[in-house]
Structure formats: C-alpha cells, structure tokens
Length: 255
Image (cartoon, rainbow, N blue to C red):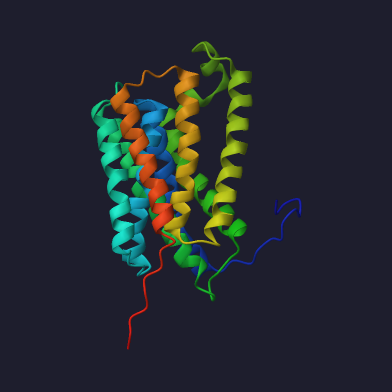
C-alpha cells in the first residue's frame, strides 16, 4: 500500500518501533499457537477454547489498562469457562498439546489487543490502526522468516513439495486466498479495536466463533456428542450474556 501510494507512508520514529516490537512478538506467538492447536485438534474445538478470549481480555485489561470489571461482568464469564471445560471433557479429538496451544493463543492474542489499545490511546505515540497493524505484520514477518527457513529449509522449495505429493499450484492459490482473507479480517479487527475496549472487541470476535464452529463441523464432518454440543452452547451463551451485562452501567456513588 505504501509502495503504490494507496495509503500514506507514515513517518515512524525509533521509539515508536521499539514500542511496537512487543506487539509484533505476541502477534507472532498468537498466530503460531493458533495454528499449532489447529494441527492437533478439530477446528471446532480450537475455536471453542478460543471463546474464552473475553476472560483473558478482562484480566489483562485490569492489569495493563486499569479497567476493573463489575461483578456482573465477572459472573457472566463463569458460563464461558464452564462451557469450555464441559466441551473439553467430551471432545473426541482432545489432546493436551492442542488444548494448551489454544489457551496460549488466547493469552498472546489478547495481550496484543490490550497492549495495542494502550499504544493507541497514547496521543504522543499514536498511529492510525492501519499503519499500526501494517508495522506489526512486517515485524512479525521479519521475526518469523528466519525461524521458518531454519526449521523447514528445503521443504519450502516447490520441487520438494511436489515430490511429497502436493499440488503446488493449488497450494499457492489456497495460501494466497487464505492470506488475503486473514489479513483483511485482522485489519478490520484493528479498525474496530481503535473504537472499542479490548473486552468488547473480544466478545464481538466470539460471534465469529459461532460461524467457524458450525461451518467446520459441517465441512470436516467432525463427530460431536450431545454433551460436547451443550458445552459449546453454554460457552457461546456466556459470551452473549456478557454482551448484555456489559451494558449495565454501575450506579454512581453518592457523595
């Protein structure tokens, strides 16, 4: 976008880059952990665990932004945690590596959102959401590229992938489509984050989980038991309950 003047090239100071680097690190880790979980367990189960995002967002917002939750908010998080636990106990594809990877992605992704929000509200350091996310993405690429080459090496070459039985052209096309869709989703996500709190953002993001869970179950024909469905439903109902109680404003204290 900057090269073709589709978006104004920003002037970024060294101090701003230093402040953005931790965001790039947790952004990279969040995506790594998510994909690790997707490789270990069913897509629907990964996103059921990631429905716990509001819980981590509340905790991290209290730690870094000083936004203390009301008792109503805390109580609405109980069914989310309980529903995830119930779904975990009956998940056919369950394994600890997939579970903890998804939990780690919750921590890292919500850390990125909370720290990004903290960066956005600092007027002397603020960048618009598109610029901020673009810099985070570029930094993440620089951080991850050497690791990828070191770990995969020759496996990244077209000849090796073709010898492994992969349709290279199909892989490139699907990877490109996935990259464009994912970047667009993340970009819109940052545009929303600039306008709302990290907790509200995570709750809105959980609405996406409903679509992903249902679609993945249908597409991959994932076996789902009644108790597993109940756990997933309870977790998502907790997200809806949170969205309702978040509107309850605490009564002002009388002098």
